[in-house]
Every structure is written in C-alpha cells, then in structure tokens.
Image 1 (cartoon, one colour):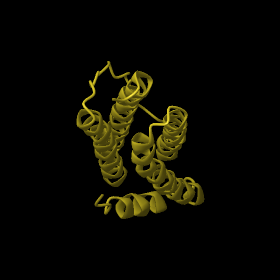
Image 2 (cartoon, rainbow, N blue to C red; image 1 turned 30 degrees about the horizontal axis):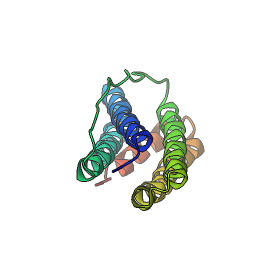
Image 3 (cartoon, rainbow, N blue to C red; image 1 turned 60 degrees about the horizontal axis):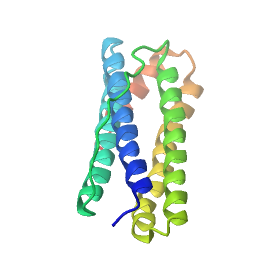
Length: 163
C-alpha cells in the first residue's frame, strides 16, 4: 500500500506531464503557423514524449493498485515572438519538471517508499537528457541570431529528429 501523499503527488505529476505535452503541442502548432516545419516536428515529438511520461506514471499507479485521479489541464501559451523564445520557455519548463522529480524523490525517501524512489530514478536521469536537448537548440539559435538563412538550415536539421 502506497502512502496517500505519494499517490497524490504522483497524480499531480501526471497532470504536470500532460501540461508539458500540451505546451509543446502548442509550440508545435505555433511553429507550423510560422512555417518552421522542422521546429514544429521537434516540438511535436517532445509533446509525445511528455505524454509518454504521463502514461508511465499512470501505469505505475495502476500497477501499485492505486487510484489515478485526472485533473483539468491548464491552457498553455500559444504564441512567441521568435523561435528562440519558444525554446527558452521549453527550457524553463524542463527545469521546473526536473525540480518536480527531485521533490517527488525527496518525498519517496522521506516516506521510505523504496520502490517509488527507485522507480523515479529513471525520470531524474531522463530530465538530464531533456535539459541537454533543449539547451543544444538554444545554443545553436543564440549563435545564429537573426540570420534567416541559418535559421532555415537549423529548422531543416532539427526536422530530422526521429524521437
């Protein structure tokens, strides 16, 4: 039997992950309207990954015989001035999610819920990769500045992302 504080916190994280999925899908839609198909694809894949993370936590709660309680998902931002602004928002969000998983891990340790603590390690490691991936794009966009030709080249390169 899991502690109800842990169950509540994991249910909140499902919502956080679904919000992240929604946010990245909103970014993808904005990139589509701005005719940046590569950036749109990158964000759409990111959205799918976040949805997958939500489902991982969902499945874990079900496996543990716990109730999944879904809450309303907040509406995400829908427009940005430049591509780099969307990626900076994505980076800020990933840092927030990293903090969420650190808090969840701290709670599992405090509650002596070793199974959940071990389970959460995958997400902690995944967040390192998530932050690195978005940082690489921001570094490239920073170097490019306002060079339209270079932006088109980066958009094309990023559009090759498979997952």
